Image (cartoon, rainbow, N blue to C red):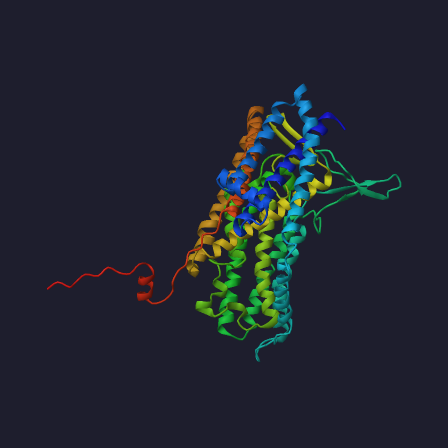
Length: 516
């Protein structure tokens, strides 16, 4: 083990020890505040929390220790007292981490020793499964004058493309396995270099690794239009027909914008393979900084393609009952319903790969965490390949969930468009803006190619600054979430009754004698 590797491991162990210690202390202190002290240790934690001013102060102290450890580690790197600190951190970090894990587990076991029954809340997840199972046995109603074959085929055509388009979206970096002289595969390589990709013994974390990449996504996603149109036409209902016509025209209109918006990133990345796009972003900068207008346009068009509020004209219940699946019931209706939600996940996953760096995290490379700026490495923590790939998969899932949450938030925020507003937004606003983005991207690329080395170096520095900004924003959000979860719930009682009872509850009303 080299000195740099030992320094990185000591830094990692100390950070994990500090993190687990203050998280355990915060959880215990919060529980003691809610239920009261039951033993001497609870009394100690309650007194310590009250002296510090609350549970939040414990979290703030922990975050401060993280920053202090990083500053001391960077400052003392390469010095004699830095090597002494490394030995101390290597041993004390391991001991503190073990103590925090064992101590937290022991406290949890001691706290529930007298409980008669421990509720398993995860068992509640069986209820959605039961609802889905019941849907299979519900009555399958087909209108008397409907085409039975096309009526049954429409939900499959809508559901299938929304699901299989995820096949080309990579959710993690390539796994590299050892290959023997006879061509037999061994175990996973413990470490891989930062640059280059293993050619033999490589396993891509995506279902299908196609050369056409994103073109496959759009080719299959466009077939969902046929399912919606067929469902409206075969329903033998004017409401279904109107919904099918609306869905077909809306999806065709915004499919054009969706395709043109991707041309800008394709010009920048120079490839149609989604995994290569992610690797380009990991080297330079995320697509949201390189193509900000394309991200906004793609997001708006993707929400319209999934037919979610405020673009839910094809199934507007106030106008056409339920749109193109009015005459569907049972599992066929559920397939249309699931197709919309799967489309939300598929579009979020694609946006993550195109604009949010996919599985990439700031300063996380294939050989570990490397904090560098302008060619100077400030901090390097080597990590095994399995840890790096696992962190990348978790980052991809978190980004996808974030975009899904934003789309669901819009659903409860904006009202539904009128149909003329929907068409005007697609053809007269988003489409010209996507063409402008293509022209602007071409001009910028030509200017960069004709510029000198200093411009390229400046762009490299801007890319590194963008990663610093992402890391700072992510840390701020993580701290905010911790503070939010630790904030005590404020319960306000609202009397929902007659006005006289409400007035009495708030202290009565002022009265005065009526004057002549």
